[in-house]
Length: 499
Image (cartoon, helix red, strand yellow):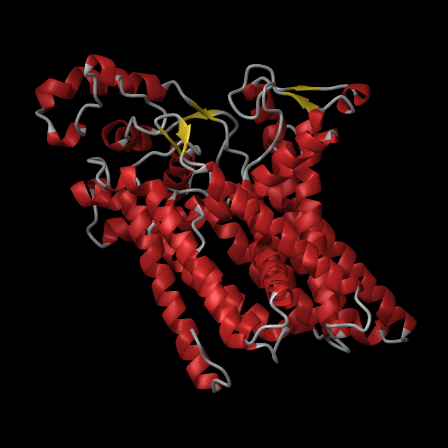
């Protein structure tokens, strides 16, 4: 990675190589992890199976029989189970490797248990599940079956990540066309980010791709002297896709709406609003209609505009009074750091458990959290620096990215304080924080633009060669720490390599 003055063709060749490495990275780790992880993978898989049959999702339905058969046969107990080594009690071998008569009674009992489980995520927007369900049907057409068909759905994330790396490159090249380190730094980190969401069946995996596209299109729309209707259509559809992937992406739409309103105000002041009307209306209609349709559908089907109340009742959460909000530990320095560092660490690494313990190393978490806070803070300082170290358009993009990150963190901070989580496992009364970085993944490309720009500012006195050496060092740290953390999983008899 020690290069300067690359031609455009060679630069694209490097990005294509990063896309290939990202594909290999996600494929290997998706194959290493057995089914079904602790981040509700069974529930998301069930929704994908139902969508593959064109099912209309209803509130609090039981898990489908087709999904139950896979969950019972291929589910590993090692995410939430704890082996008792003192009594030589180990996990049993996979059911498909044992005689049917030996495991029949266990399978029947597990099937009865799972048939009574309610799918509490049925109100989630449908885009990811429609894609995953279509991919499931394609896998059947291609002849995949049993455990290979399960992993086929996981491997859909390979396509998502390849597209994400290319989008990261497109975003960095658009904002920093003169800075080689930034142009290649963002896609390089995306190629090796150890985020476990990409090794799982769940809708969070699609969020960074949808909002990454929306972010690029919005930046182009905002920076156009006179945006056109075609750009408005694509930007609106990307925003709609972001919302229809995950309801928790709502803060990103709020910040995007504010940015669009600011652009409209500027067009009005310049006397260009009438000329820009087709672009404004196309963006508003293409973004607004799908969102409104889904909100109305949720109100009719689930009883509220987001469909979240049924899940909240199912989990047993209750609303706190306004006065009780202010007693939350997030308003202390220690509590705020728990919230912030937990979100930033899991934004990089994910939230898998193994033997009921976080699949993480505290020191590695701390490195990610401190680096994230420090480098984003350097970016913020640079935005106030005089003389300016960025152009006006670059500053606007970085402020937009900061707004997306801050709004998402503020949203989950707010959710942390308004509920009493009762006896819920997570969040809980003992840990009353949403510290799930996967819920922030819509901001991944904006976040890495801020992160790599801060990285560049921290090494401003060094050559590009030194910067790329440091970036290579960080990527090696990411890979080595990920392999070290996940090493116990590599030989797991329930994974793809043992089917």
